[in-house]
Length: 581
Figure (cartoon, rainbow, N blue to C red):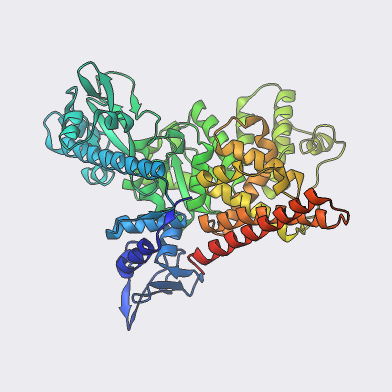
């Protein structure tokens, strides 16, 4: 595994201007040798956040959060340790060097840097063309008619693609980018005489990752232009639609501070809500939240509130249903927003922002939303009863469930026995009641195994690799090995829909555990080798209990002991390199 060199790490730390860094999140005022301001991690009226510009440390006396510059970026940008150092390197102009990197890995990293630079350059080209060219006048008029200001459009770096066949490709090639790089970046297709622009005559929306790096584009058809209405960058090495949360790079500070996010469907919805004073808004890139998008939002929002404000049509309702079920499993509170008169979020936000805020305040919980759909669907009395019972019996006891039971009972005019049946699981004779909570006592090894799985979820790329190196003998419990197998399939992008319901509670618990324990690559590596250590010690114990060992078994015993010592040495090395030790 590659890691940042010690020299690069020290260079980044030395280059950081702590006051400048923190000032991007909250306004600081000099008081003596320190700086103070309102905490960026929780709402407060009286400043309790303190920054030491010399030692480059911060601490909040209100919420007790503190650390160094790297920890500050990890928390505010929801990045792991390595990504936070890379972010700081970009911010303060420090070139990052890596140790233990194979030539192939170094080549891949270099290729990615060039593609990111190419996409950034293309975004700048499209933006300049939107505001400076006569050809883009219709696009500027379109934005104005939609009620979007130039300030908002510039903030999100909107652009316009020329109608010429190869304007962008030609400009990029003069800067040294190759036709192959243009194709890999999703900017070009192959023509008989060279690369041709993929996007032509369209309004351009840069699609950035959580760190603000352009990974692709969404291109909107202009009135009278060629379909489709929206054309995205192709799936490839730089862009994955299912992993993109549009506007997250803009919304992250507010989501982190307020512990809430508003999720809409489209690009213009996000722009309109930001313009209307709701900067915690992001888009799901379509009508269905994906599992990756939910995990990304959970990392920023924590156990806060997720408002789903999809367009009020059938597709929007189905998308809300899928998204809310996944989001609830991460521990977030999910609210479904019903927009007035069936209008889309952009229209409501721009014409009447207060009406949109009122819709947020009146949003319904998941169970209320689902029962509302059951009642609205109509049908015979028996049909409505069966559908409502299916939803209510699967819900845990709560005040909201009791309210919905009374609502259904009143609407259908149920007898007490039929009302009780709404919460009775199929095959049960009695209403379901929750068993008293019991605290599960786990051994240190079991806790390490669960924490390892949790960090694999939080760090999916490295987690997938490490899980692939383990076998059932590395886990003390068969259920943990089954969970590891399910998580490995999930991280590999396999179809796990048939088992998702079974594992949803554990995945939700592990996501919460990873958030609480601040998942990092250092900790993940340490836990991985601890599992190897447990395995070696299991083998040693079994062999030592056998007093009659032949020569081959004695050699096996010696090999296990050497393996144990090797793993211990690896653990010592990892702990010595950990940034907080």
